[in-house]
Length: 180
Image (cartoon, rainbow, N blue to C red; front, side):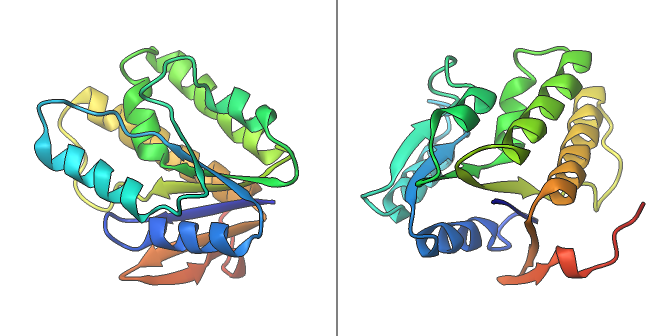
């Protein structure tokens, strides 16, 4: 079972993903993708707050803290009794920009979608909606916007369930009209 949860910043997407994970009755592996910056106190505090909000029985894997952690490999490491909660695509993609060139970034993103679409454990992927504003001035920001938007479309397409969160409410995207 693959679930995709998307929305803007502070829309409730992580809360919804955590609620769905808690209700699943499985061993939850929370995959945190945020990179820590030792010079950013606000970001560090936010990461600590997120850690404190997770149930103590959940396992946490931090991808940015260990370069050996790979999302494709994680999709194969767990069993049917597990649920992977990936939070989030945006921070994962931002981290990938440090290591991968543009062509490889698209291929790597496609590999991640394919891996989670056929994963044995249940998976909940949190992703950010992007591009509701102006087109970014810088090429790296435009690339990030294009890849994250494409990732969101692909995850929503292959997911069993897909939700858009807005102002603390969730809309079921699979009930909507799919644009072909």
